[in-house]
Amino acid sequence: MNTQNTATWHPVTRSADLRAGANIVAGFAEGQELALWRAADGTAQAWENRCPHRSVRFTLGQVVDNRLACAYHGWQYAAGSGQCTSIPAHPAMPAPRNVCAKTFGTMEAAGMLWVHLSPEVPPVPAELEGAIPTGWHFCRTLTVRAPAGTVRETLALRGLTADAVSAAWRGLLDDVNTVALVLDAQPRLAFVHLWTDAAPGSPAMKTLHTAARELRAGIEALPQG
Image 1 (tube, one colour):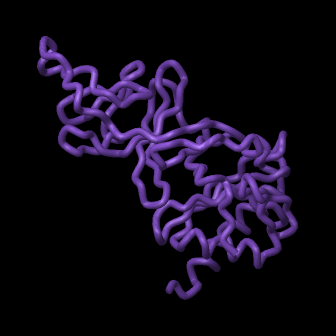
Image 2 (cartoon, rainbow, N blue to C red; image 1 turned 90 degrees about the horizontal axis):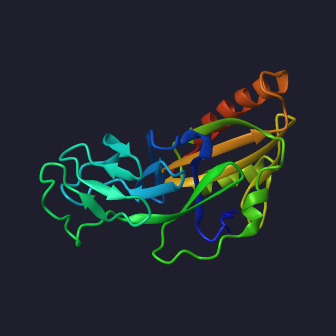
């Protein structure tokens, strides 16, 4: 069973992991390496993790107000459009109009940053906002060295079921209420974001942490074709 019906909206990271005008987070979706950041005005950005000038990773750079600056030569690119706006080494020279970072569509729902990789971003399903029940607590993000399809098949075997629109998996892991969002990161790498109604620090939350580690070990022990 390979349920991914969010019109290819990928849950790449928690919204809380991006601080306005501050950090740059590395991410992946379907093998695409991403630079995730939040401009000073609060808008979330997902760019190809490659400066178009010399192909240096943007994650090595820094956020400057509403621009992303490359670590190599300091070229700066505008949030939203990805257009080059400044070359600090040559302040009198106009920024080249044909130099632009590759950007992807983003939206925020259910406490997550979702990314869409196609040039034309489809309508955002309203159901994504309800992917995580109100009042539930984030548990952890699980890194699994296996295809996302294998992860979903294992969740189904464990009795979890996937919502037809949000693709959120719901059910019990070791008798703890759980919701999981599965991210196709790379062909043999998946991320699983886990939430629960158990209170932070409670025995049930600790049980889910243990269950998650055992889930990962079980999946990674499977033969990988």
